[in-house]
Length: 297
Figure 1 (cartoon, one colour):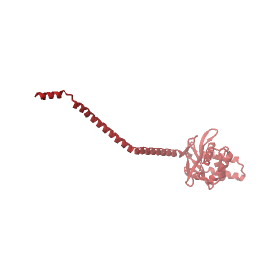
Figure 2 (spheres, rainbow, N blue to C red):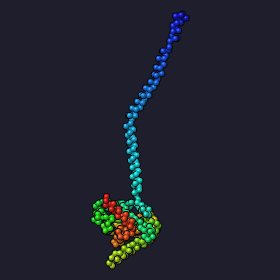
Figure 3 (cartoon, rainbow, N blue to C red):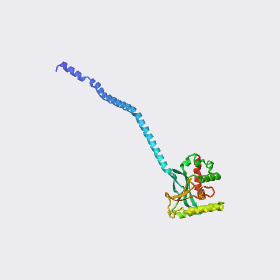
Figure 4 (cartoon, rainbow, N blue to C red):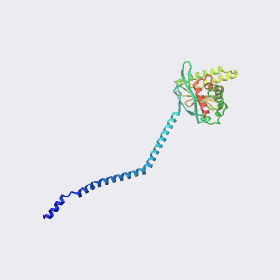
């Protein structure tokens, strides 16, 4: 190698590696910047995509919320409907249907109920409830609602309430007394209890001989309407006062017989409705409250 070439080579070797020093940072930074740029681009695209779908997502969440609320309300209504199908007597815990069928197949609605107890023994005998046709209760122009005595009804006033109950019983309005024994019993046992109540009512009334004889005929006729066999707890006797002036006795959908004795029918129903010594004070109070609530609607 000539001296000139050698000197040039030595000079190049002695110089710092500027080319590599300058190039290396660029070579290192370029991939980082490129990566960061791709990340930012992806983030931007994602943000735009999210902004584009956000209204749909919010609408879907709102729709799901509405559907969930509607479902919960439907379940609440269904549960409420199921619970309102029967009414439980607070003393005996017997369940009474809120509605039963009237003569023409339309619903008759429960106005009130209560337990009958033997006072000195405090023994629960049966639960009694009063039903009236729903159409009579809901129609302000019905025979029931249009009675002046009913329009003046005051639950806490014995005179006005007794007058209203008497007018309801004496007018051609369908009423049903549903009587369900608390424990197993039989027809003759219930019959004898009803007969005693009617006999006591007869003694309290000042009837002439003809009226008294008619009342006695009604009691004898009434005694023949009862079954001789067992009546189990949960079964119910229906005493249906028809607008045509008759009263039938039913057990488990079977009509056992009927009577048209006016004194008997009125005395039997009013025994549970009049304010002085009712057969069941709780039933009378509950029925009176039911009528009061009805008139406030």
